[in-house]
Structure formats: structure tokens, C-alpha cells
Image 1 (cartoon, rainbow, N blue to C red):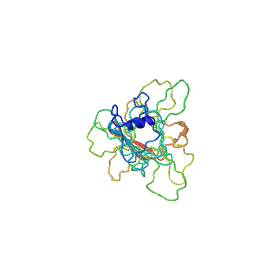
Image 2: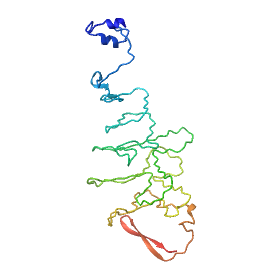
Image 3: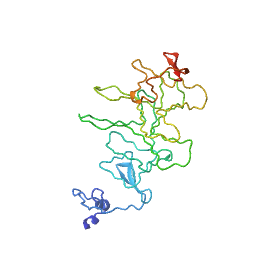
Image 4: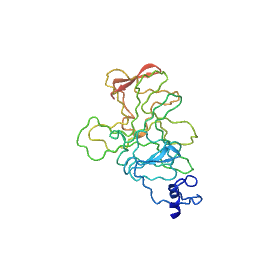
Amino acid sequence: MSQTIKKSVGEGWGKGELYAALAYDATDRFGGMKIKALMLNSTGRISFLDANAYIYSSVTTQLDLVATTIAFSGAMTANGALAFTSAGINIEGTIALALGIGSTTPLTTSTSATRGVLVQSNYAKTDGYHFGAQVISQYTADGASSGSLRAIVGQVDLEGTQTTVNTAQQLVGVHGRAKVSGTAYNSQLNICGVMAQLLDGGTWTAANLVYCLWVDNQLTTNPTAGKVAMIGIRQNNGVGTDVVDHVFDIYGAEIKQLFNFDSCISGGFIATSATAGTMTHTVKCFVDGASGYIHLYDQ
């Protein structure tokens, strides 16, 4: 300590008492000592390399780490809330991360009253595909059987007991929407709210059921009021004009049959024996661009 204090400002290589007090590298000519604590009683900064990377405290109990890029090496633990400005979080590359957001409280955003998590991307004009959010779950078979694999699971759960009626209420597990806010002018443009695809590839040796879209009802009892359907299709634009051309638009020369009614539903809407009655209705269809009709009988 006495040797450190004896050093005067400007001595040697222009390193004075402050340098000698801070330096603790044994190879340094001044020697020095380790500092137990350092207190900055102001908003002064500790800069690194240039003025664009520094540490300081803008307000009491807050530490500000400022730099164009901040790199963390090793594990990081946050005890307390993490608040991000509109700049958000940018993660480049691949990371191994188990991310849990909002077990009982949603992620705090500027619109937290209407959404728990907001993922938004602004697409620039270019060729190819653009995904606002993409989730890929990959399973590598090792010869043994495995469980189910689902990339995205949407689930809503109504708990408690409702006592009032809200005509606008909906419980939806997955909601897909498509919208044109500008002017669509492309004869090759396809628009859909939800798209389901089976992609080609690999070798198919055996499978049980292969669907592009799987609708599965697991209810064991019906509601005392209301109705249950496997698929609900509504024309709900409220304008009262013919906007929709078809309920189903079926295309594909390799489709063998339109429907396959399994024998397990015999006794329901399938009658194994019936006598033709009086034709009461017809269902209008389009077949190869021409109108056709399916006859319905009252028997």
C-alpha cells in the first residue's frame, strides 16, 4: 500500500497514483493492488475501447449496459422481470433454449389485454416463401416405436361455471386468418385462412390413416342446448350477395372417390336398405364446369 501511494501523477509512463491503485497485474511495472469496491456517485460512465460501449447508472438501483452489440458467454440467470423496449429481441443463429412464456400471466406487451404473445414480421417484396413464424419439430426414427409428434398445439380451456350469456363469445384452439388490405391483382394468387399440406418425400411402406386435414370429435355427451357438428361452414359476410361460388372446390384427377363412408356408422345417416320415396330436394353441384344435381328423397 505504501508503495502505491508513493507513486505520483505523471511519473514513469504517465501512470500515476490512480493507475497504481487500480492495476493488479504482477507483470506491470507499478505493481498495485486489487480493489475491493468502486463507487461512482454520479452518472459517470466506464467506457470500453470507444464511447459507444459503456456501463453507467442512469437512476438509483438501475445499472445500464450500453453497446451496439452485447455478447453473453456462458449461462445467464435473471432474478426478476425482464422488460424490453420496442426494439425487441433479435436472436441470430441456432440456440438450444426451452422458452416458457406466461404460465398464469401472459407476456407483458403494449397490447397484453388482447394477446399473450405477438409475433410480427414486415415482409419485403421478394421471391420465395416468407414465414411470420415457423415451428419445425423433427423426429429421427431409430427403429423403435415412438409417441406422437405435434409441431403446434392450440388449446383453450373454459374453467368454472358461466352464469351469463355473451353472444360474441368464441373458444377457438387455432385461428387462421387471411386479409387483403390493399388491392389484389394477380390471376395466380391463392388466398386461404388455413392451409394443410402433406409434403412428398421419403419411402411409404405402411401407415394407418393419412390425412391432409384431421377433424376429431372426442365428446362423450352432447350439450343440453345447442348442436354439435364435425365441421361448421358459415357464409358470414352480412352483405346478402353471392360472394362465394362453391362450398367445396375439389380438384385433382387422382382422387378415386369423393366420399368413403365406413361401415361403423351404419344405423346413423347410412341406411343399408331403403325403398325409394319421393324426390323432395336437389343439391346443385358443378361438374367439369357444368351444373349437375344430386337428388334427395324423403324415404
